[in-house]
Length: 406
Image (cartoon, rainbow, N blue to C red; front, side, top):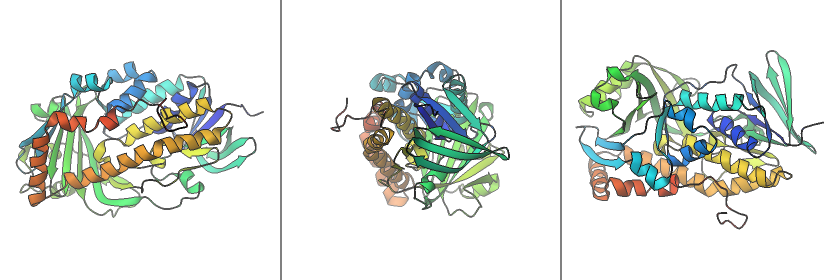
């Protein structure tokens, strides 16, 4: 007989693992299917804003993450051409006091490892690696999922199914939405470099952001400040197969000419030997992402551009809100999932649109860029931080049925 409180999750990335950990806290059992043979997250850094760290700490991950997380004192925004500071947004103790949770910068692999270790240690979570979903079906008793694993088959059954399988979600396609994500006509390059190889100012616990015409560069320390994460984004079309690929340093540097970028930023871009590049894409806000006892979380549901640093944070929020809804309506998964979707739709749409707007603002040129810089100085760092209160103060609960917070 099928366990009455088993939920199947497809995808063991940040969203899938966080959802699993949140669900078991509400008394559910989880079968987590991951198509790769080993559950790991490669890549570069990630900014965990207070709305994300609040949820992760509540799930018991605080001590694991504090071992390698860096607490930035500020976000320093500068002009690309001359490196002059435009404005500095205070973080550190000021942000933690305001929001009741810290602002951390971490390596994605460290976050993934912490989530995986916590899930692997939990007897109510079964992680099945190397399982590629082939089919799924909703029936009177719940949901059945058929997967291929090691040349054979693997079946999973539960009262509900959650897709956490990313931007190119297979489960989203099976729900009837076969449309491809919208290409943003921008490419993101990411790399890590030992901190000893960069200028001392770039080893400090600060998020550096240089704004240029048609592109920007972000850098900050990760892994207990032993490494520096670098992200360079510029306008371009994607011509590679797939959606990410190795990238040549000379190709990247050609996109950031010395006539338009300061020496500090260029020295930083020249430091890594290896780069990997990603084609950026998102989806229009508001598209439905569930049906019956099936729903999606994170990028599978509402992918967004990286200009608000909220892609992973919104997936983490999804996890705790969905688990909260399921915990309140365990006998009616379909209704719980619709309530989750309704409670998330406006917020994630706002985040998606805000990310798009930031992308346009970051890459302004000429007189428009000068007006942007003047406005940022006039607003000042503290008031710029306060503009993100709507993001950072989220408490992780779904609204009640009448739309008001519980």
